[in-house]
Length: 329
Ligand code: NDP
Image 1 (cartoon, rainbow, N blue to C red):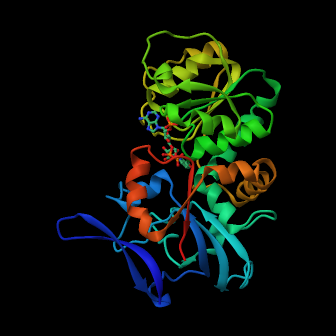
Image 2 (tube, protein in one colour):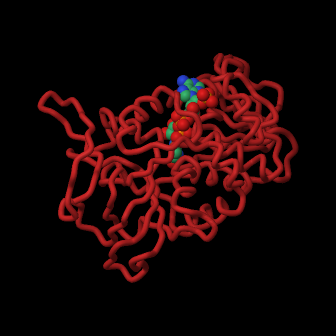
Image 3 (cartoon, rainbow, N blue to C red):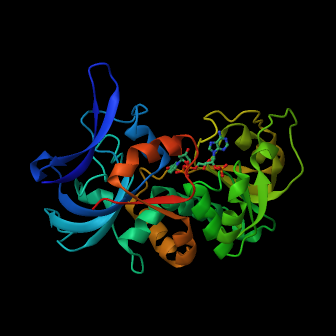
């Protein structure tokens, strides 16, 4: 028997989360059983720990959209007992049971070998949020970021995606402007490498202007909403925004076609869930190389399974700073 955080639904449709003891035979029938060491808390986990946000298919459910651990057994030749692995995406923790348990059973295709130079704890300090931040940086680079001069904007900077994006971009030598609605995080963001702090309210007013002054050479946008509408109008000629999140709204308020047709601005969509294997391996290798581990450690807030319901509520309110690392044991 082992511990799992189980979310169940009562007769009135209300969800409840509690730590319960389950057996190997309760796990889904899949190819690889992993002894989970660490998981984390992402925005989607907040939804799946609560009402489900339309993501969870069946109850009882084990949330946790990512985890890292050691293979215990495998019917797939690519993995053998003792291999260190990391999992993000594939709707694990939403449609499938996830990482908030001491064991998980998943498809071999969903796993990535832990890259050299990273521990399982560091992999979950990165987590889906940090992995996706690296996908954003790679997309911006692929669209010419290195050739442009000027600050790179990171929105929702004190959150998970934003913190990791800030640290990676600063380490790569870019000038990072960090947007936050929490002025008290300014020292933290500077410690990650931000050279400019932009108050959230500077970018949330919806304007009717077709374009604004050209400021940003690139942007990692975790916020969407009115902020994305404003940022697009402030991008330098030919530069790109990697749109990764919707913490501030799912509609791009006030957006116009003008930045695209008058300034050749690119809006790059970033999904981490269905990313092909080769991209995943490349992103994890880049993380091991380009994310300074002392900065990653500065983002970490440690937690256990029993802290998760409260942390789930906090992340939905935008109140989690940096990255939570959940020691499931
Ligand atoms: P966090 O909650 O850690 O970070 C989001 C940050 O956005 C907050 O910390 C806050 O930063 C800012 N924010 C929150 N609410 C608002 C608001 N109303 N207006 C403006 N800013 C706001 O979440 P994550 O970093 O884990 O995820 C960020 C987004 O990216 C989420 O929408 C998530 O779903 C999405 N995501 C998408 C992925 C993909 O595959 N496309 C993968 C991972 C995440 P501050 O306090 O600094 O202002």
